[in-house]
Length: 343
Image (cartoon, rainbow, N blue to C red; front, side):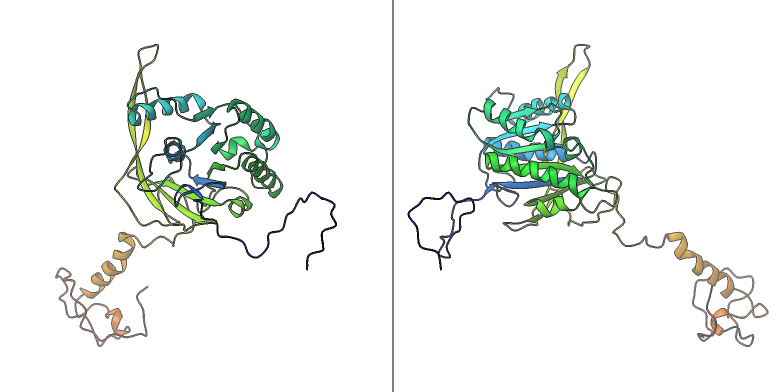
């Protein structure tokens, strides 16, 4: 039983809620079935598979409040920390504007941060700078692209990864937002690279890969407060942006929806996603044909030739085909025997 109140007000750091709570009915998503409203998210995949293009397109739907592939979207501010190639990322922004905003210079709540960042030591400064520049408005999503550039340490060590997760949690708590980190896969390719505590801490994990036909596939692998399994396919479409000061063409790409869908497999085997989790390689055509060819050569010999190997090596039972006749491929008429096997 709770202790009786003494009349002296005491601040409580860890408040307790009684059993008779009411069910929350407010929507808890940014993109329904893909991105929760708050928490930690990880989008991972092999290098050069289109991860950044995919995530940029996804969060732009949040910026504009547009439905994403038939899914409901809640509008919000996005801060994108592009730590790999900020100059090229600006071209992606212009290409997206040209393709999806018809080139209009509408003011949309998307903000690019392209300065170097060590999240473990700089997260407090990042929180203050975002808060000051947004004038008190809170971002809905902060994207860290990529974890490798934002973690100055060893991502395989539990201590360094724990510090990185703590920094992301501090940002999430400060703005009550979703912190989305883009990450690479490991050598095996079946999970995000580095210490497994990252997958244990995130609220949603999205796997991204690109097949040999250039189709970029993404799947929600797990989601703590929702149903996982959403799969969506895309392609990259080139966009001409004009020419540079030397008169050479400038271009970039945007994500467009693809109608091509394939069943998702966690150990998809292709050039951009190495893995050792798939079953061993099947026998090649040449290896399958070797025993058959050897069998036909032996089965085509004359009555005076060696005994049929299926007859267990007995010289009294031979193959029926003449000596100089081409192998017909018909089965030997000798009775089978298990005393001798073709090597």
